[in-house]
Length: 115
Length: 112
Image 1 (cartoon, rainbow over the protein chains, first blue to last red):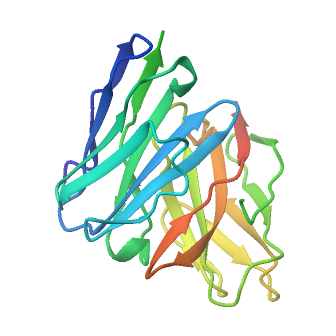
Image 2 (cartoon, chains in turn blue, red):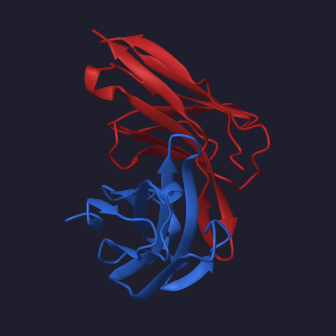
């Protein structure tokens, strides 16, 4: 089991550029969650999917953020255009049956720096 | 908003039990309590969960009060590698699935 795989691990980009973060959930997991972590705000839930369908995106900070899950094995979080305040660690997590049993499995995160 | 409150930090001597408290006074009858920990900048790691009975696994024990308004995570023999931020979370049911709202957690430091 390779776990939840996120790419890239680190991303440095200039303000105004488009950034795409990628996530491959654990095979067989049907729920996927995107979180953002900063020192000031802690871990924030951005959006989550169940069976590839977005359930709640109320945590997405602005229209500059968008997320997709075209199939059960892949999801993207896009920021366009990026701003310095978007700098954070972005985590993806997946679970089977919304974590009824053993909870979520988190990826190692993508550290985004916008300069 | 998070439905839990935890002390911001705690210290524990290596080899001793670490008892991490959590208050969740507004928890509903069918909402589970979950515990995760985050070591340095890694992704949070699942530890244990429970509804109303005490639970134990290879990592920890979870004690939930009878009124379910608080719980305690117990690491029976803390090691230096248990130094981490520990999050107590109430799982919330929404739209046919569940979500976790993380609070600020307790930063546990295990001392040699």
